[in-house]
Image (tube, rainbow, N blue to C red; front, side):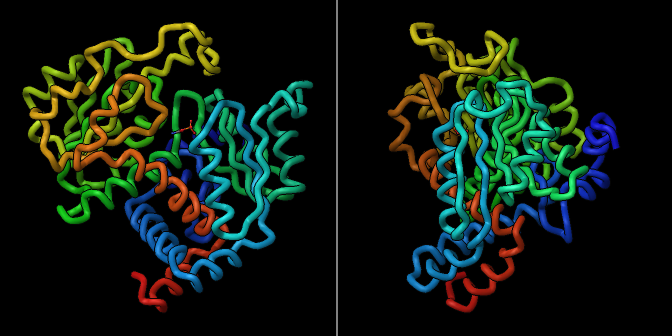
Length: 365
Ligand code: CP
């Protein structure tokens, strides 16, 4: 199968499942669309089991033995604080060992080595590759290259260009499910995503994942230049979900604020202004314009039980004054990143059933 054929096959649900899952478990993790509702329920329940086992002395020792001998390569060609460290912490919780390459210039990519040759080399020493790269297709190309090799190890995207940030959206769904648990869960909810949707891979991946639930509405508030592209809107609508698009947060909240169950704020992704996805030079003006800032004065426009989320890093779009709002769960999202990524490693390497069984046996779930 050529790379073009592989990419095209990822566009349909049946072939996507065949390519990205093995024995019903995720193998490569490349796209939010690859997960079913049942997969998401299973992963989030596993994350809860891991979180509770980790608090239990015997549970913690049990977790540490599960992936002993598994080696994880974190290959990060773009900056990261949360994702890289939470993948390392997640692996650590399950006893796997990790290595981080955070400056890709120190690898042979800088000598012109192809993606395929590089990941094939890494597969000799590692059992999973986690990769963040400014190119949308880097992780897909790595997975395709490994499929054709004699040692096809799993590839997990930790952020693919402007396109997707699958594992961020998994932890976001976990946080939403957990935050809305007492109110009947994610089904029937209205979720508002604010900011640079065109270039924010976390918001885009979350929008895809929301279609796995029976949400009532997905609304976007975004500057005209950064609106979600037609394909994403059509995908959501195809799942029977209403989509709204607006270009001013204040006027949107005055009309609909009381109906919104969760707000997902994002920053202006200025690292893409030059087109390369690398950090914006210091001294440049950072931050979004006023129309896309969740100002403190909007507090009366939303409900006290509205969930407030942000993938971080933030600049000016979600002021610190919101941190005492009852729905502010941004720091919980960060922590959940570790549990959800541990659940993903467990599912990929076949330790998830054992985790769930042990949590039941210890009376933790
Ligand atoms: N949310 C997120 O991806 O953060 P990092 O860029 O710090 O990994």
